[in-house]
Length: 325
Length: 247
Image 1 (tube, rainbow over the protein chains, first blue to last red):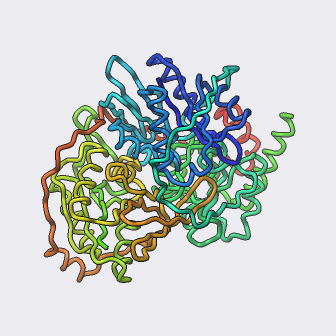
Image 2 (spheres, helix red, strand yellow):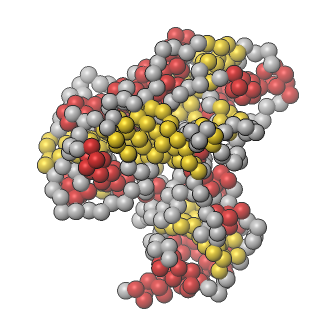
Image 3 (tube, rainbow over the protein chains, first blue to last red):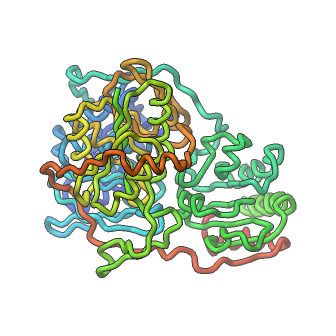
C-alpha cells in the first residue's frame, strides 16, 4: 500500500500533490497494492482530480487548523499510515513535505529519500531511489533499509497524465486530541504574484538580473512573461537591491526551480545561481557579455542588448501564439 | 538559554565534483571543505547575534564527522561560537546524524537547536525535522527571521505563496534560510582565540542508519549552447517549439 500526503492551495490541489499521486500509482504498480491519498477539506472537484491522478482511495479529513502546525499534520499522516497499512509514504519535497516527512521518518524509523527525481527500482527487498545531490551537479542512488519507506518527490520531476479513474472517498477523522499544537500563528503575509503560477510549480519562467540596470526596466520582462504565460523570477543581487521582491529570487539561497523553460536575461550565471536552476529542461540565455559563464550552461543563447532583444522576442512569441490559434 | 548550532562539513560551492571507488564514494582529494553555508551564514551568525544581544548565554557547535572536519569546526569557533563538540562518526545518513545531535542536545539541556535549511552536498533538508521528531519538539522550518523573548521564540518562515510569523515556546528546533542574518568574516582575534576554545570529541550513541548511498553519477550538464543572432528570434521561438518542445 502506498499513502500520499496531498495539499490544497488557492482552492486547487497543488500540482506537486498531483505529481505525487501519479508517482505513487506507478510505485503501487511496481510493488502491488493500492494508492491512498490523504487530503484535508477537499471539495467534490478536488476529490475527482485526485482520482484522475491515480488515487484508489481518498481519506478526506475535516480539520480546520491542520495547516497551522506540522506536528498536527504529522500525527494525521501517522493515523492514515495505520488506517491504510501503508508501507510506502510519498510527500512532495516542498515546504510542507520538508517539515513533515523528516519528522515522520524519525517517528516511524522509516528511511527517507528527500528530493527523489525518479521512480524507485524495486527488486525483492531492495528498494532504491535516485535523487539530486551536490546541488544538482550529481545524482545518488539511495537504498532504503527499513520496512517502511518515505519518499519526498522533487516538484516538476514527474509528469501528470490524468485518466478517467475514480477514487473511493472515505471521510477520515483521525483522533488528534492527544496532540497539542505548539506553534501559534501571529500573522500571515501573502506574496503579490498576480495570476502567475507559483515559482516551484511553474513550467515556464522568465528571469532577469542586474543587466536590466534598474527596477524601472522590468516592464519588458513582465511583458515577455505574459506573452508566454510564464512566472517572473530574478537573480540574488536583484532581490538584495530590492528591485524585485525576495520571493522571486531563484538560486541556491533562494528558490530552487526546474521548469520546462528558463529564460535568463542579463544574468551572468554564477555557480550559486546555476545550482538553483540547472534542473530546468531548457535554458535560454540573453546577455550582452559573450564571456558570461551562463552560456556554458545554456541550450540556446543570444549575445546582445537585452533592451533590444526582449521586446522583439515578446513580439516573436505573440506572432507564434497568434499563428497557433 | 543555550543554543546548539549543527554544522556540516561540505565541499566548497565551486568544487568540481568527482567520485571514486567505482562511483560509490565522493572523491575528497584536493577539495576545499567549508562550513555548510546555510549553517554558517544564517544559523551560526544569528545564534551569535542573539548571544551578543544577551538573549543567549552560550553558543555551542555540534558536528557529526571524522577528525578531518576539525579545521571546519575551528572556523566556526573563529566566528565566535564558545565551544564545540564533534561526534566521532562518519555520519552515514541523516537519521543517524539527527539521533546523535538529538541525544547530545537532550543530555546537555540545549533549549534552541539551529541548523541550516539544507546542506549543499546532500540537499536533504531533513536533519532539523528529524531532531524535532526524535525529541518531540516544535520545528520552525525554513525560517527567515528569528527572535527570542524569554522562554518564547518568534520566527518568520515561508509558506506556499507567502510567509507566516509564528511563536512557540522553547525548547525548539529551527532550520534557517536566507534573510535571518548576514555572512561574517572571522577576524584575526577570533582566529587566534579559536585555537584554544574547547573542542570536545564524543563517541556516537548506538544508532542504525535507515538509508545508504549505493552509487553516484554526475549530471552531464549542457555540452553546447546554440547561439543565435539578434535577428533570429522567430527562429528561436520555432526551436523552442519544435526542437526543445517547451512552448
